[in-house]
Image 1 (cartoon, rainbow, N blue to C red):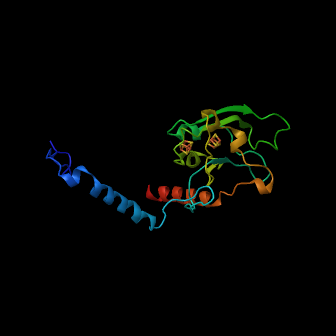
Image 2: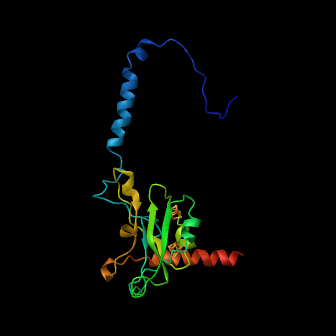
Length: 187
Ligand code: SF4
Ligand code: SF4
């Protein structure tokens, strides 16, 4: 049975002298290689040269703070439930008196981890989040030699308090809002 019409029958015919010395085949191969010397290079000399990414590229997540610097995440777990790769785990904790500046709501994520080896960067976590706390960014997840290095905890995810350490997610925010509006209009 043929699965495609591209299969060829094997022919065990005896090779000619020219075929047996492989010179023609080698010359053909060299010609193909030579042609590529003069073609435009399609690869990038990463990390010295980087390609331009789509404005809505989905990379390394950020856990956002509000305008006052408090963590927005309330450890509701909706992002973890929405995650098809089961990449998100968290431990919730109650906010103590005097921690109002650190955490926006009474419950917060004492531990929040994303396994970047499991993540498929689908963006469903940010769509599921009711607090606009998690976003994917255009930052690339760095490579590592050990698996543990790909478990990103809060130290790798929560943005800094200082204005220069804030991560701009306005493009993604707008993109998600448009998607939600389109989905609502289609219902
Ligand atoms: S981007 Fe997708 S796979 Fe990655 S953590 Fe979010 S929901 Fe899970
Ligand atoms: S990131 Fe959003 S969805 Fe996930 S636990 Fe925090 S508040 Fe809930």
